[in-house]
Image (tube, rainbow, N blue to C red; front, side):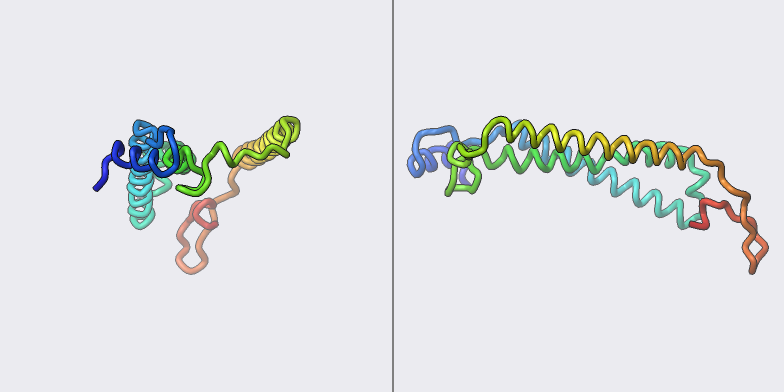
Length: 162
C-alpha cells in the first residue's frame, strides 16, 4: 500500500507541481461522523422496532424525545459524506483527468451565480416556512375521541389507527 507522500510524489511527476494530498483531518473525521451517526440511527431504529413490537412505542418518553432529535441525523450524515467526497478528491474534478482550476467556467458571470444562489435560498426559505406552518397547524389540532375496535371492543388511540 502506498503512503500519501509516495502518491503525492507520483502525481507531481505525472501531473506537475502541486500538493495532491487531501485534507486528512477532514477525511478522517467526516468518515467517522458519517459512520457513527448511521450507527446511532440504526440502533434507534432497532429500539423503535422493539418498542413497536411490544406495543409500547407511544408510552416511551425517552424514545419519543430521542426520535424528535434523530431527525437531524440524516442531515449530519449527508453533510459528512459530502465533505468526505468533495475534500477527498481535491484538487481534481475527475481524478487524474481534470483539475479543479480547469473546471471553472469563464462564461458564467458573478451575477448569474449570485442570482441562482439567492433564488434557491428564497425558494427553500418559502418551502421551509410553509412546511413549518403546516406542521404547527396540524400538531396543535386536538385528537379525536379514541376509537373502539369493532371485533374486540378494545379502545385504541387515534394515533395508532393511521
